[in-house]
Image (tube, rainbow, N blue to C red; front, top):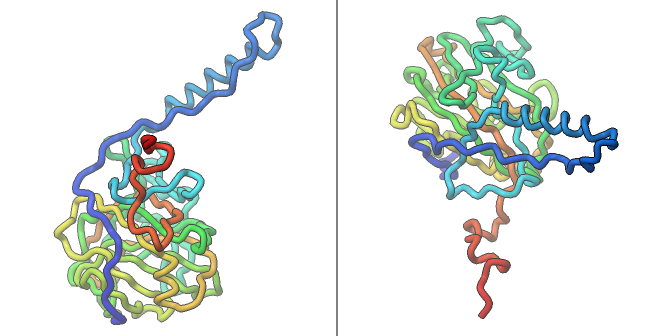
Amino acid sequence: MLNMRHHLSHTLVSRDGCTDVPARALPSRPSDHPRNPGHLLSRLAGQLALGLFLALPAYTAEPPPDLYTPSRDSLFVLERFTYPEQLGKFPSHWQGRAGWRKARTDRDEDLYYKIRSEDGDYFLRAETQGRATDAGCKANVNLRLYNKLRWRWRVHKLPDEGNEEVEDRNDSAAAVRLVFRGGMFPKTLKYVWSSTLAVGTETTSPASDKTKVIVLRSGTDLAGKWIWEEVDAYEDYKRLFGGEPRVVQALAIISDSDNTRTPVSADYDDFVFLIGLPADIDEPIDPSEAPENREPK
């Protein structure tokens, strides 16, 4: 074990509710003069755009209000799993990798991550017993710009006596991995929901000295509840590996029990990279204190 450290993370005991997808401005319509040849096409295009907009899923989970969320141009939304046509399937643009070589696998028994829906919300669910597959997608994110990673997860079943420091017990209920560019065995940050290790534990994986493990959650006290997490991945990398990180090549998740051989189940959703507040600002600015909102003296 390297050390113990507090990480910024937030508990969401129940869903924050639904918010409507913000309306999208349609192009201004040309003159209604009957001789205008583009009038009919413009109206048809507008009706089609409106129809597509109304067909979009209305559910959008919101993080707790005390989590600072920058403007859209400072966010990189990586994955929200909103694919109604892939319900019950492994995401088509994701890859599964299994075995100690992390070789790509297309076997259905290995791809135990499936898109599910609940109250209009789409997410990815992992359910397995006795298997270990990393599921991931391309990221290509520079942490020197988008220094923070935010997501939410929910565990249902944890591996019995799983322990990320012991080789023959190295199973996690849920884990999020950032894989950095660099060779066959790249450096990896692994954020886990552990069965036994204490929150704040930082250690090296028994499977690879290039994988640093950080425990964000532990045990069953919050099982069955959606939990929001936010980590400063840039600072975590510098502290645990030293130096500047290379580009995050992929984001991967893993819920596994190949060592404990016990049932494991967890859900994942809403992966977003974002530009965090400067280090000298402790809290988000109160909108009422913004210069444009202050009353003249």
